[in-house]
Image (cartoon, rainbow, N blue to C red; front, side, top):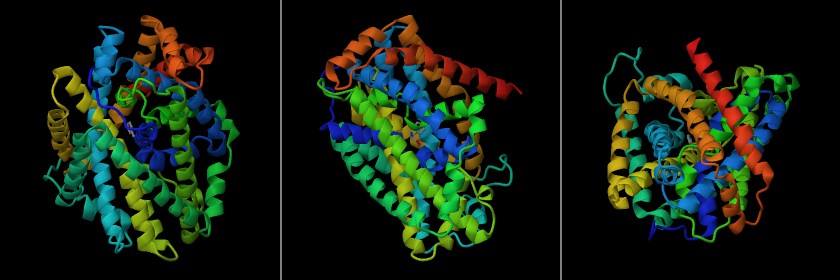
Length: 454
Ligand code: PHE
């Protein structure tokens, strides 16, 4: 595509890619997943998954975007004329995710404001479900949009779409250059305070204590691979879209390594921070750490406010820091998820970015209102479950099978990357993509179907 917008700097691209990878998943998913799947022992399957699938696939997606210079549907249609659907499949998954991911960021934004006077009170669970979300007793009782969620949600969409509207360099790159470094600084402050709290050591012990028996369990390996795919934003059309804005002369392989390690570094940092404060909470409540471990919505919006309440000093300050971090981590990911369909629509219909933002973003924003209703959390759980069970593994599997086995482009792609990168791709890269990744993803898909049929 001629006159395609481009990143202004290499750092800008890396920040944007890392900003996409570093999201809610790093903060509320990774710590609990690692803990449940062997603690310290989980690092082996995790690192293995990162090196055999995460980074190789990231390199592959960077190559695809860079080589075909287009959105995911466009790029896949160049790889094979019957493969355009795969691009749209990935874009569709991202589209759906954006409709509820935005809602969670909206909650985080609300909680940033609540933190100023610890508005959630002592019963943080009742506050979240009853007072804030106004969750219906049963999913059937639809009672309309909840205003307290609607307002921050509208704000999040305004920010997200204005960034996209401004384009790659002035919008996405500029936003990530501010949001991501800010996030890292805020988060570091929290982690430094967290590890010095009473009880932090017990929390960290619980987190790092290796349960070696778990390594023999296939489920632990699946958990590692799933975490890597989700966390690195792979097979969501995201990284292909972002790399399509790279200038011709751009390092690909090294950039993928940097992005991958930055993401895992942040993940580890989040694990340390989260388990330190969980250890602190366990000590305050006089219970073992295992009793306070949680992930997801419960961790962020029920357990964290509780922890903030118990903080020895500067409660409001740390509350604001935490929820602002969550908001920023989420925003940079939301921007990347939404850019997949903005770019997809632009390429397909030959319309301007501004119009694509209006149409794609507008529809997504409207749909997100479903999750801002008083039944929102029920819908969110269901949709998230389906996307994770049926969407992602198929998207990744089709991607590697088409490229490695149907069009057999890996050799060409390898030379493409090697002609521009510092690090040379060797045979290991092709083995990972043609054998290891398809096997793992195939197994993952069968396993998902099996558990769902039960
Ligand atoms: N990787 C990001 C996260 O960990 C964002 C993301 C979420 C990307 C869901 C794709 C799908 O939260």
